[in-house]
Image 1 (spheres, helix red, strand yellow):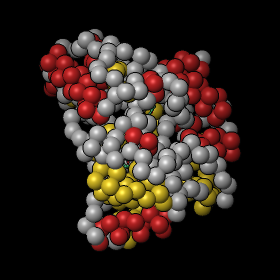
Image 2: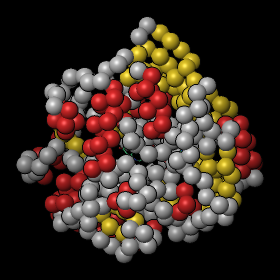
Image 3: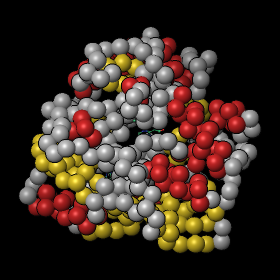
Length: 354
Ligand SMILES: Cc1cc2nc3c(=O)[nH]c(=O)nc-3n(C[C@H](O)[C@H](O)[C@H](O)COP(=O)(O)OP(=O)(O)OC[C@H]3O[C@@H](n4cnc5c(N)ncnc54)[C@H](O)[C@@H]3O)c2cc1C
């Protein structure tokens, strides 16, 4: 089994506050913290916690959580199980099983290097492979639901490990059966990828423009990955410890979707929008935020909107979760007042609320 692990999800000294494990660098003390390097150990930790009635927080890369300043008074399970294994080969495709604690972008790089197509547009997304099904991570016209064929999870309710089909995972826009639920611990994820040197068809206009191609065209896997990484870096969407615009959870709000009737009543025809197949319309939260009076760099107390991307709320170094959520509330309320549209947070909020 190849080892593509690089120790990017650095583990902090014992007794560190949870801020040490989140990309926002926010969050108070854990009750107890267990680092699980093996899936068996992770399952045992959850089983014991359930038996003793202790609450559990599963944490991997910490790039999609906002943890309260008071921390989490339960068991924090830090998932670090690694491994990539080819488990099936069919005509022109390959099925690859990835352990939950594998660094997602290391796996994408590995796929590109091996000539496995389907993940290249998801380059540069922080965090672990096991967390990708949780909110069906997506970017540049692609999402993991396009390639996931099974999720192997420990079901705490049934006390058993089972393989869940993509249909059972109920993938939707930034959502799945796993999000906001502590029933399942994802242990491995199976991806079916095309064996091809070319990318999947390009679906995202900005990406096509940057590549000098048209939507629907394909480019080399390497070209697709490099271009996505460059675009993301320009928006502060690739982790860089020296760049506080990346001390975030990526997009703080999801793009709101409104019904056809609601859309007609909004009078926002001039705004950028994406019509859905059922008549609903998705609006870019970043546009709404900017047009409600919150520009890039708009600051709170030690926190601010990123100077590179309106959707990212960032810790400037001396922020707190309280200040971050105050800023988020100000933005959410301002958008509601101006457009009558409610924004919803994309990350999982732990021991805090908006
Ligand atoms: C700079 C930046 C850019 C980003 N860009 C994108 C983007 O383009 N698209 C996108 O979709 N997201 C993006 N994100 C959000 C984030 O990277 C993804 O959601 C990522 O998949 C989270 O992985 P993680 O390992 O850090 O999860 P964590 O933050 O550790 O956990 C997130 C949630 O998943 C749960 N969880 C994690 N692992 C497991 C598991 N094995 N089993 C069960 N539950 C689990 C946790 O309990 C928690 O509820 C971005 C974040 C940052 C900081």
